[in-house]
Length: 135
Image 1 (cartoon, helix red, strand yellow):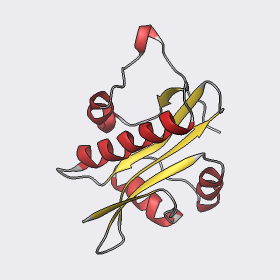
Image 2 (cartoon, rainbow, N blue to C red):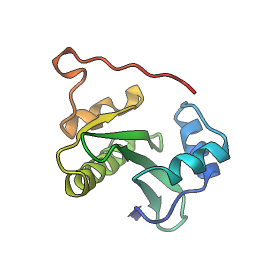
Image 3 (cartoon, helix red, strand yellow):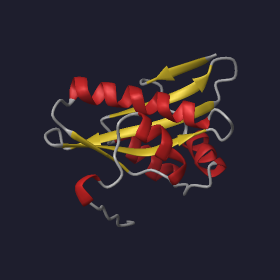
Image 4 (tube, rainbow, N blue to C red):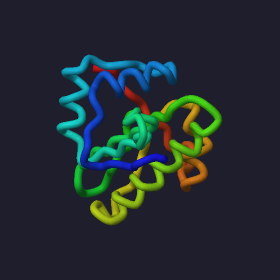
């Protein structure tokens, strides 16, 4: 009953609604559209019957060494981890095919730790810590 889509862009309203339902920071529609436009790819998990957005992630890369996953989110509920795992797995598949050799990092909420670990991500590998800066 779901479609994983890389061509159809969710509306900023739908993405913000999903981010909000997961208690994550929302963004202005203008900033979301700019982020989507400047991403290398994005994946959206839609329910077939309603068209409702159930999962999302976007990918950016320097096309050489690094690929980054952003805005990883999935509809809260008992299948949330499964939905996240689906979009992460497919994103990794795309990165390996289109950006071979890139290391992959992710900026994600705590709710995504289990799906990320299930897809091979390590928390702070070799003691590497990251930092973020809000614009």
